[in-house]
View (cartoon, rainbow, N blue to C red):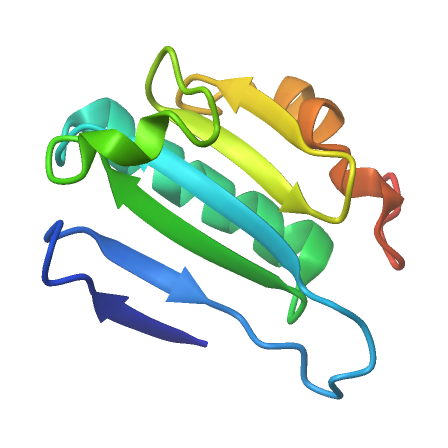
Length: 119
């Protein structure tokens, strides 16, 4: 697991590579507007959910719309923070800081991943 700082946004983003390279990683984009408490909470909540359900199979890209507002158009972002699941298809979106973990897991369909179980 590695965390690096994005020089353009100042936000940290985390990239998880699949250990064996056998399956395509989940690709998630988190759209934020600066380092607000809600944006930071959304990132931490998303990272925690991915570690629990997609360990070693995900990539999170943080896009700060204060720095690059033109990127909102591609994924039709109307509110922030918003997470867009780009892969696997179909594309899914969820708005908010992801503090309602159950709703976020269902909204992003994280339980379809192998190894995810109810406890």
